[in-house]
Image 1 (tube, rainbow, N blue to C red):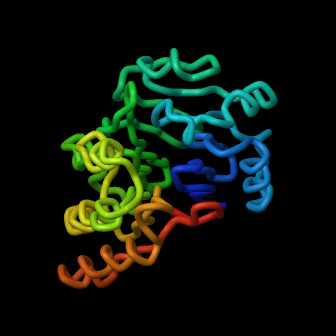
Image 2 (image 1 turned 120 degrees about the vertical axis):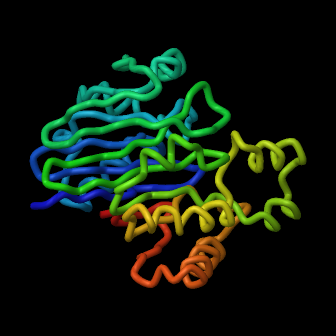
Length: 252
């Protein structure tokens, strides 16, 4: 089989991506529960027994909730920036914020994101066969490191967390609203959409909108903003879809 990457879950309740080429398999994040991750892998004809590693973006619970159970049962390696390690409840292969790991025919490179955690990163995955794609969520702004890292990625799982008006007039307390909308919060629909022309110019042809807030956004709202920007800029052959919050979505 060729390279395949899937979002298993994508929301403030849990995040997990599965990448495989049939020989080597790994996860990015392990939020949600070990049971639900195992069920999702089984639905893809895979098994956690064949997962060799998990790459953690940051230490918030919606990205690490299943780590303890999965690592104790299956023993796979966990990679994360060293700054996060004291806040992750399992042994971690500690790295600098920007690091690279070779895994089978894959090379996994981290890049800095801007989030209110001890340290947050996204990941670019490159396969010897030529595929290059990325996971870029949990960032309050598009960083220069993101721009550089995502050049040449054929597909990107990109955060489109909130709609500005829904957040502004929604039920959250004002301090939480400010946190989400800050440069160390989450990426809005408008910010995500505005990044698409840049990505297109650097080779991206498929974007999966992820980490969509159930309180401050809807998949339809996020998709409408992205499609409107794509139409305005003539990105006619860019595929744009929403990651399911509690289901499997193909990234590449």
